Length: 550
Image 1 (cartoon, rainbow, N blue to C red):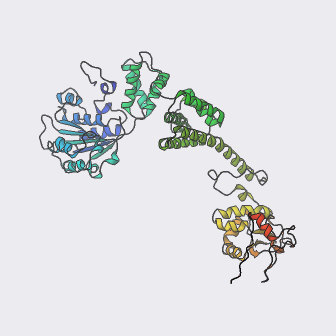
Image 2: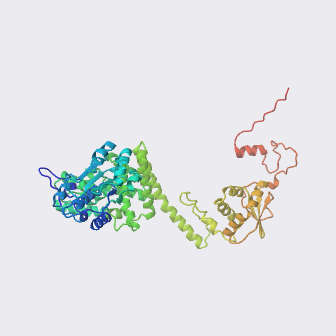
Image 3: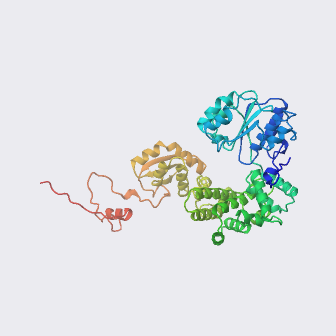
């Protein structure tokens, strides 16, 4: 049924407001449950309707009030023609009291409208119905005053509370109500409804404009209808997608596609050019990111099978982009929107976010390809030491290098040692640090680990089983290890770390002091140990003579 208003224009949202349960769009679970309860005469004394704005909570409350007070009721199909139905639809019924809790938050308002009148019998109808809109806005005192009445109201009273923020409704109130959750309406459902209204009102609307209006409403039927009504007032001609973008400040599609192409293609120069156009046009950064996210999201959802179709223009523009890249871009755009909300420089947040997306979009597929090539070569038994890809960033690769898993049993110790150090580092970084300063030498069946200090020998000995297990995994066979201090590796086999100084030539501790400034040491290249220490550690040594005590 359409609402009529004499002597004035009725907006589409009111003119086509649903008048029966079947007309409510997108809430079948709520409609069917309420209809079955009415048919079975299982009428609860309090209901709580929760959900986002514009999805039919207040409308459903009025339909339920009509179903309870219809002359033919209680019925699941109110006639809409009797006096109670017409008065409830016009919000003029004396027995259906609507209270806006956003403007009547105090306990005095609750006492005046509800508590003082709840005991009175209905004026004419079967039930006295209290509809409290935006119920979460009531104060704590008002909720406490309503609590007892809501728990045990008279038999002729029904409460219907509607709210967009269910978390703010006290649990003591919610537990006394039957709760119904209203969901956002899908974009396809909104589009079909707008198309139906356009035919009834003889409004010429392009398909692209309907898609834009449906997406912009974000699940709210009331918002979608209001946007269509506003477009009709703007022009007497056909409502086009460009007109909708111009009216509501949406970003031009060519700009969005250009930005998306620059991001997915890794073209920083093109991205900078499009950003200049964004600034010249005065586009709102948040609106730009939301529209960009919407376009990428449609393609991504279609790519992973969560949506039946995507926009053909967007699909063609980024057809060669992988699903991983799209997901990464969506995550970065979301993060940029969050930074935009809390930052004091929208332009800087936008630039940092988009250029960060560019870097991620360019690097991720390259790293994936290089790692896949490396894995393929390892599987074929190829030599990966010379042509292996460089280490990927920690955010992309957290496992040990693939070369560690590929080293064969016949590989010399010089190739096994770095792999062993990296494998141990995954579990015990401190132990790996000791191994880095040690050397490995092959000596027949048992391999020696030459350490610098007795402390290192002790620590490695305590973890010998772990080290041997890692070495067995890498080499493919069990190799016993022994740990010693220093020692030359000339006769023991090939040393792993030739850069580590050979300690066999170092003077052994004899209990005699040695002059560190003496450059006569063999192998010192004319430099004293102190000079070599300065070269390695940096800085300058100063000698301070201690004064004799008087």
